[in-house]
Length: 203
Image 1 (cartoon, one colour):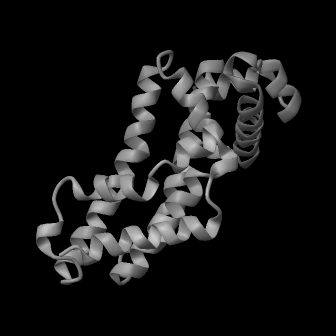
Image 2 (tube, helix red, strand yellow):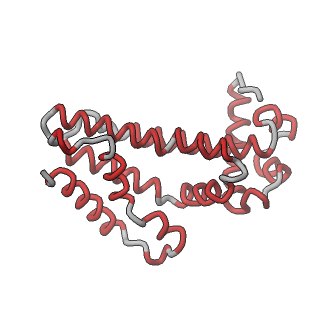
Image 3 (cartoon, helix red, strand yellow):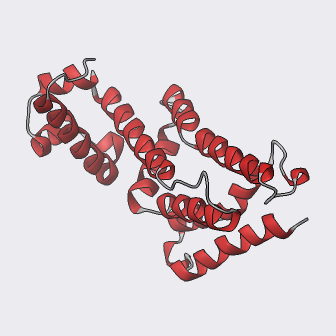
């Protein structure tokens, strides 16, 4: 598979990714054909094969592109030098917002259903997404410890996972299975702030 070297090629590749994202998310992997994607994006089957190899390669590229976009949005929160409550709120609320966005919910649904078919991709996405989120959170918590804003005994190798699990709670599964029961934005924000209080005040 080739990476485009011209602006025109990059735009053509992105158009294929965008079209594939829309169609995979509405039709599912098995219901999507390359002809549907080409009809939506324009271009040729030759370009698609050149950039992605085949339908499996295109699906993998879609997943990798969006997990990269999600990580970029989390990186853009710029929490590295914020006080504890502000930084944790910005990072946590951004994470929850992304996790509950319709696009990421559908891509998550697709990936979970296809993980047995694409085990290597599933592991790759796990390492590029959830694992990096935990590492970023752990690094920020360590910075808070170094500043004296978080007691050192509160930070273990499990703290980031425990805090993220507390913030995430059942929101994602609720949004997937019973979206009408999902709390509103104010209730979710109150939950996030309460989780931060638990972490910082449990001394």
